[in-house]
Figure 1 (cartoon, rainbow over the protein chains, first blue to last red):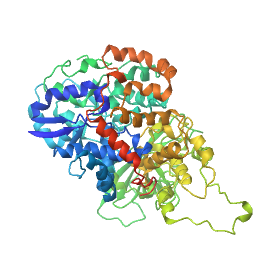
Figure 2 (cartoon, rainbow over the protein chains, first blue to last red):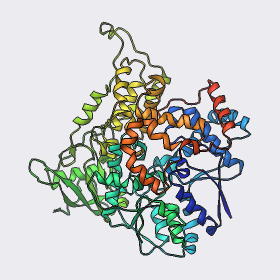
Figure 3 (spheres, helix red, strand yellow):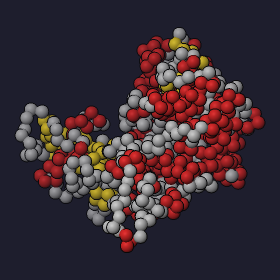
Figure 4 (cartoon, rainbow over the protein chains, first blue to last red):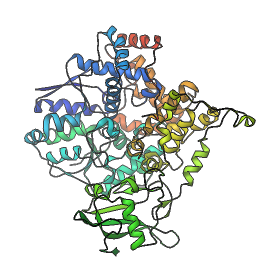
Length: 285
Length: 351
């Protein structure tokens, strides 16, 4: 059994609970175990790093140290949590001064940051730790009737100096996973674009413009649905979809699935078991 | 459609030559109703840059083809264009390296940078950038009286220069502007290049106009409108960490200048407060804390009904339990607050 510490993203505890629900359904099928870090904190959401850089560093050192205490790598299913955790890890691993500083604080909590745990995205665990062949062997219901638009989101690709997996201009990892699950992917230019999430409350019109571009682009390909490895992208593309497309007078809509739900569908779980019925835009097939 | 088999004259022809098609964006607004693409098929040796290939086409096939290029050495920034969909400098991009990025085998797609008005073919109007540099005071305004000019040196310590060393590498090529998500969505947005320039000036101890620069910067279309997509930094031809500079401007706006009465600053502050109180973000309150109750009711109520129907509404704060270890987390945060040790070195725009 492959075991990982699982970082509980704030949004998966509120608006996108269905993401973890789907993951809970199928982890055993792959002999995977994700141990949830209930004591982990918010990663700072790509905000804390400039409001209070020291706090950003310390709380994310603490988050990673919680995984290190269990001798496990840390996995997240949110792109922005991935960015925060990996950024903090880079700042710690590249500076003894930073490491000494955070450990002087973590010591009082009986925690220590050593740098031994990797920080990974769920997509990377599936593609690399588990492997595409192993996934293919477990598929019960190949998704052959579906044409899917993969939407990677920003922080699993960029900055590539911090992520280093996919070519940010031509990402493949999600397409490869979709492929072994039996579905076809569509080629569309928005697959590596931004969803606009981080400015939804600050520059709403522009954010909805950004989301509408991606949605319209996916709809034009005649894809059955979008799949994304990020719950923040999901929130914009699903919950805000109608609002975004209304501004463009677009009547069509497109369902948006989480990565964990896509895998679950191919393993034979029902839409209800995977929480797909919680989405604002329904998946009809 | 133009096609030629003439070999490139500038280099000796060797066996490592391929026939390559350059699919080039063409548009002269004074003549053409719509932009279109011309195909130029030429043999290209390994080692030839996109700029040299374009020069060859212009000199030998299509003299009307327009693009900017001066230094031919990656210094002046004038030849930025989209090559196979990604903004790069034509003078530092090898044609053969690009072959693996072609959507169609051996066909290089050449387009002008995005988000700027096209004057002709690959030549874009940079006035928008200049106007924004002016709007955001993208220069150092010294405190020194004019009658002292030339009489006294400005000494910049090395440590200070390190703060904006990388930012001074910017060649205003507009690659970041071309790739910027927010500029595409909102043409009035400040743009990453101007944010970087603003950061560079803000970090300069000779400057005396930070107050009015910051006042402009925190307004609509300014520093808070960046959507953190990291495209500017990813595609910067000089590898400048532009996002770090944007973060430092935000940090300065809040911490040094106390400009906290903006939606962006309030939104960011919510993360600090919620980590302190719950360990997690209280998402249900985020819209109200960022924009106030009236905005939230007006903008979010119709969507809130739909979310509630699907069980997707974020829980109210009283239903959100803090993390189990909240007490020790608060001890940790109090400990942190009590320390004056600096771990953050303020290196936005430095490498």
